[in-house]
Structures are given as C-alpha cells and as structure tokens.
Length: 402
Image 1 (tube, rainbow, N blue to C red):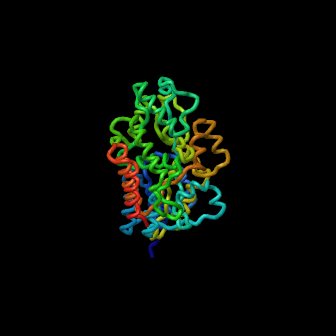
Image 2: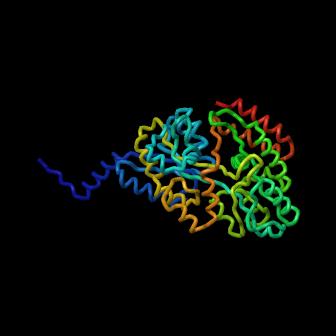
C-alpha cells in the first residue's frame, strides 16, 4: 500500500481552509465614507480576535443611501446582521418586525444619560444602541456683533435678543443676520424643532398623540416668519451644509450647529449659546442619535448583539465620539473634563444633554418630516400665515398617526 505524505505547509493550508469554512460573516452597514472612523476599525478587529468564529464585513454606504439599502435588504429577507441607522427610523423598523429589541441590564442602562437612552426607547423597550449623538447650539460671530454695536461678552439668550441681533447685523453690516435652512432636507425640520423645544412645544406627547397645534408652536412659526426677514436670501436653496461656508466666510451672523461643526469654522471668532429661550420656554436643544440595530431573521442575532454591545461599551464609544466630534453617548468618568480641557466651547453641547428634547417618534417618520418641512417653507416664504400652517400640519399629522 502506498503512503501519501504531505508537507507541513500543505497541511497548514488545508487546516486554514477548514477553519475558513467555519467562519461566519456578519454583514454590517455603516453610513459614511470608507474608513472615516479608523478607531472603529480597530475595535472591530479586536472583537474579531476575541471571536474567531466570526468575520465582520463592514460595508460603508454614502449618507442618503445607507438607511434605504438596509431597509430594502431587510424587507427582501436578506437583512444585514446590523446597521447604523438614524434613531428616527426605529419605530418603523420595529413596527414592521424587522429589528429585535435589545435587553439591557440596570447596570448597562445606568451608563447612559436617560435623555440619550430615551431617543431609542418606546413601547417599554430599547430598539437600538446609540452610536452617534449630537446636541446643537447657536454659534454667533463676535466680529459681526461688534460691527453691529451688539454686546460681545455673551450671545442671545432669548428669542427677542436673537431677533434684535439678526436685525442689527442685517442693517449695520454687509452680512445677513442668521442662516435658516429651509431646503427639502431633514435639518430644516431639525432646526425648527430646536426652537420649538425652547418654547415648550411638542409634535407628539408621551402617549403618541399629535399635539402640534399649540400656542407654543404657533409662536415658534411666528418667530420664524419674523426671523426670515434677516436671513440669507432664498432660504429654500439652503440646507445646513450650504450655510456652513456662509458662516465661515462672515456672510451670516449666526448659525445653529452641532459640536462637530466647530471644525469648519476656523475663520470665525465665534461664541456659543444654547438655543435661546422662547416666551413660553427655556433655553434648550434637540437631541439626535444614530444607532446600531440588530436585524431579525438573520440567524446571527446573538453574535450581532454581542458585537453591537462591544462597540458601544463606554470607553470604546468615547474614543469614537472624540474622533467623530460628537457629543458623548455614554457616561464615562473624566470624559467631560477631557473635552472641556481641549475646547471650553464643549460646555454648551454638554449642558444641553439633560435639557433637550428628542426627535418625535412616529412610524411614518418620512411623512411627518415632509409635513413639517412644507409648513416651515410656507411660513418662511410668506405664503401661509403661521397659525394656518400649524393647524394644517396638525390635521395632516393626525392622518398618519399610529
């Protein structure tokens, strides 16, 4: 009988091939440019080293396409193991039985500010783990304020002061008073919500009832109508991204933006404030999170959940927050001190965490967004009166309410 002898190298190749056959791939969709968060790639490599039976296929998909791709795959029965999603989509995903709730121990819940965890909670359950978080503040150009004869020791604290500052800049300098996004894009609604929360308004209440037609929200629309007089011409052509260069070039005196926006304002000597208080409210902000979700029916729910919890563990999450320029998602000892030592302007964004309001939760989030944007655009362009716009939006929101 002949004996077949194999070299050690050949045996090693066979062993590697056998091992590769036993490795399960986890498809994860991430929004943004390929490799824009190198520290995340390091964390994934570390998780793979601890879990050699799994390999993460991290697919980067451009913003504007990533959420739609993940949802389409899930509806077609080919869902990714996990995906990075705007928390605003979670109710729709849950109501369509596409994602699974995430059980958190009391200790795990204690690692989040309640207001942050609230952005991913409804029906008594957690539906995603916050991955990116932003609060917003009012950036104001100190140079333009000085030219307009305005105080430069602090920015506007109230709506009345905001209007007065915008008017003075518009009339006494070559710049427009403030930037107002009014394009058919999500941050048009987001900016309105910030001012709405600073006046005590709501879109839906804690029970999910539509309560948009309120005196507070009519006042907010009236404020918007007046503020638009001192904003950039043609606001319907501007989303927040298109306003950024205007502020950096000194062409508008104020802009509402998140902590991550500081990098783009290197030309400006700016101050920062929480969103100024309306007549029926207090200074506030909007709390926006994007989350990692675990899809159902993939057969890899357990390792996907393990990966998601690993990536969002406090110390690792804080490393991602720092690299992304985001407001911290997790409560990490010494995190605030670290950020403030690097840039005292972080105080505004940190102070907003406990007092801001979340994005409204409705199953048909896109329809809600479109309704509110159309109301805002009508008022900003002077085509409809504030009270009429709010009443019409209330009626349309009730039609799509759960």
